[in-house]
Length: 386
Image (cartoon, rainbow, N blue to C red; front, side, top):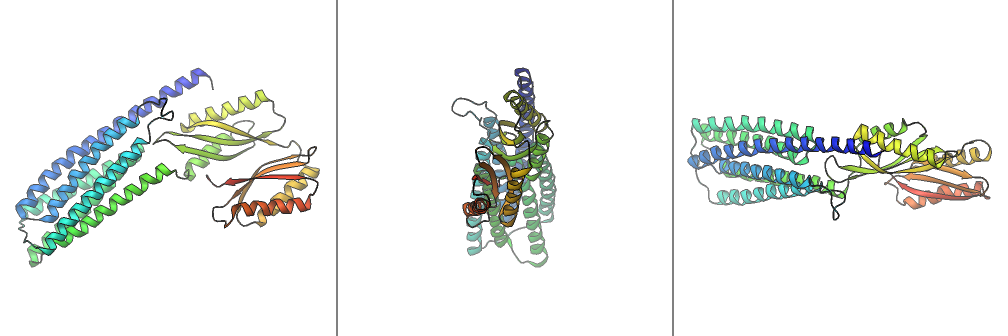
């Protein structure tokens, strides 16, 4: 792709990033204001009614507000431009801030669990009235609205931090509703479930923190490309004139909306270097335009112009032996050099295979027996994308 196209697409990507950041900041700001307001109401009600569950719920709202602050900071840091030390940008900062949020949520859960256990050992009577319950009802409704809004914005903006905050807010609404039920039980029967409910709430909060942490770490470790994205990119590449097959799509995640990677394509062996160069640039441009993803490398597999005679026999034998191996997922990159008596190909072997290398060796061994005059070079390929 030429410099003008790169500049235009770069400006479009920058505009999209600015719009995304503004949306995340706006949603997080609404979350901060809402959670601080709710925390104030709940703290007042909890202290007046001597309800540990409501007080802990208020503390949880403050931790949610702090999470929103961290989300804003993380978004700003993640959008810093690439530099010499970080040539792929700072997008993964968002995953790091998500880990911080998870730690805060888990810490709030552990602290509230400690307080709840103390109340179980040293019980104190709560003092509820119908005004108190009315405030809790309003808080539940507000939390549901905030949770649905934040989660929807997180999905739209592809922000794990916002999705986590929205999910946490919806969970909070359930917790607040359970507090309301405990208050009704106390008013109607005189049985206090406060401390026990506080312990349950604490465990739910801790689990939420662990779940958020697990998801963030999974992103940093590197996840499998989604089926929809993988098949979409391969379909786009396959529509480029001259591409005969699309394989080995690998994408690296450098933060939300910051993907880059590589792909292999099959082309006719008669193509010239100039034609191959034009094709690879067309592939890169098509993927960038359709998916906003940079394929920094487009590898080439040469395909035999003729598939008859000895070449066809070897190909059919390869497909047969590969099909007999239950762990072989795909065969590609096949090329036979009749003059040099050499055959190369890739075998995609399932991760479930007890010994993946042994699967490849078995296929090569059978081919070698059937065609002793040829040398076979098989690459053990990984199942990294659909």
